[in-house]
Image (cartoon, rainbow over all chains, first blue to last red; front, top):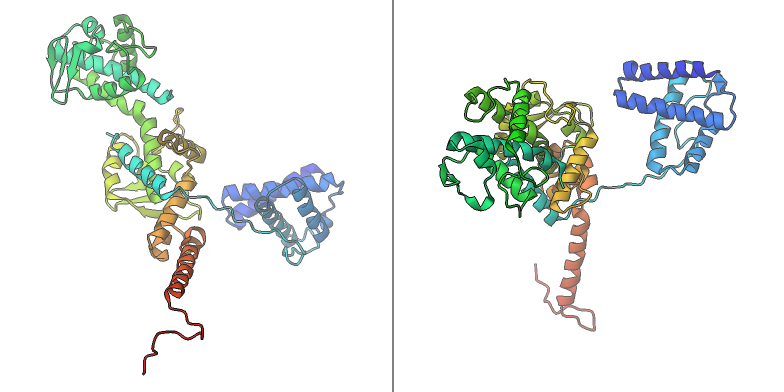
Amino acid sequence: MDMSQIDLMMDNFERYLLLQRNRAPATADGYVRDAKLFVTYLLSVRDDLNLPDLITVEKFQGFVIYLRGRGMKNSTITRRLIGVQRFWKFLYKRHMVKHPPETLDDMDIVVKKVRNCTEPLSPINYAMVRKAARDGLRDIR
Amino acid sequence: MDCAILDKFPYARDMAITFCVRNSGLPVKTVLEARRCGVVWDSSGIVLQNVLIAPVPSPWLDFIGLRDQLFPNSEMLFPTVNGMQYYQCKYSTRIKKLLAEAGQKTTPSHPKRMTEGQCQALINLRFRYWRQDYQRKLAAALCSFWGLRSSEVAKLKKRDVDFSARSLHLRATKSQEDQNVPLLSFLIEYLECYTAYLPEAHSPLFINMLGAQWERRDVALAVSRWGAELGIHDLTPQKLRASLGTMLSEDNVPPAVAAIILRHKDPATTLRHYSKRQFNDARKCLEKIDKEELDKPFRQDGECDEVPSLI
C-alpha cells in the first residue's frame, strides 16, 4: 500500500468517526493522528503495510514498546492506544484486516493508570482569590 | 509594567483633559500645564487653577487611578506615557484620532466646541480600552466561583447569559452537551453592564486584541496574569476548579449537589476527584479511639474499672 492509499484510508477513517460514530471534530482529529503515528511506527520497523495484516496483536504490542521508547507518559500512551484500537475496529468492520481487535488485557498489555490530580489552592489563598475576583468586578461599569 | 495600563492611560488622560476644559472654561494650554500641587479634589468637585469643576467628571477617576499607578512622583498633572510634558498640538492630534476611532467627525475637535454627540461617542470608547481588563476579571470570577473550565469560558457569547432565568448557558462543555449554571446575584449587575456594550446576541464575551474570540489558552493566560497580580504564581482555571471542588467537599456539601455545581454526570466523579474528607475522617476517627483508650483507667488484670450496666 502506498502513502496516497494510506491518506485516503485516513480520510475515510475521519469521516467514519465524524458521521457514523458522531465524534467531536477534535476527537476525530486526535484518533486520526494516533492512527498516523501507528503507520509511522510501521514504517520505522520497515513494515510493508500490507492491508490484511496491517494491524496484528504483535504489531500492536510492538507499538506499545515504541511509544514507551519515546518516553511518553502512561496517560499519553493510553490515549494513543485508544485511537489505534478504534482505527483497528474501523478496518476490521470494513473487512480490510483479518485480525479482529482485541482488548489490552487479551493482548497481555498493561499500562498503569497514574492519577495526576490538580493540587487545589490552600483555603487561605482560595478565599483571597474569591474576594479579589468579587472586588475586581466592581470596576466594570 | 502592565501593557494594558499603558494602553488605557492616554485615553483616560485625554478624556480627563477634555472634560476639565469643557466644565471649567479654562484654556487647554492652562489645563495641560497644571501641576499636581495646583489641584485639589474630592468626591464633590475638583479645584483646578483656582476654578471649581463640579461634579467630578467620570473620566477623572479613571485617570487619577492610572496616573498614580504609573507616575506616583510626577510633578505634572497630565504627563505623557514617558512622564514628559504633554503639549497642546499632541493633545489635538490625539483627540482627532479618538473622534475618528469613535466614528465621529474630526472637527470641531476643541473641547469647548465639541458637540454632545461627539463627547458621548468619546465616552463610549471607554469600553474598548477597558475591555481586556474587564475580561480578565470576569474570566477569573467565572473560574473562581463556578469552577468553569477554560474552554467553557472562552466560548461564551452574549446570548448565553440568560438574565430572566438567572443562568449561564454553556455550549463548549467537556461532555459536549449543553449545560446551565445558576448565576449568582452579585454577578448579574456586572454582567448586565458588561453585555450592554456588546452589540449582537452572538457577540463573544471574550475577544483578543485582534477581535477574535478567545481560545482556551487565552483564558489560562488571563487567569495566570490575574493570579500573578495577586501574588499567586501558576494560577490556572484547573486549580480554581479543583479548589472549588475541595471547598465543597470540606464544607460537607452533599456529593449530589457538588456534582451539579461541578457539572459531573455521576457524583462518584466528584467524590473520586475532590473528596479528601474520607481520609481525614479516618485519621480523626483513629485519633479519637486512641485518645479514648488513653483516657480509660488501665488495670493489670485487663479488666476495666467501669461497672457493667445491668440490663
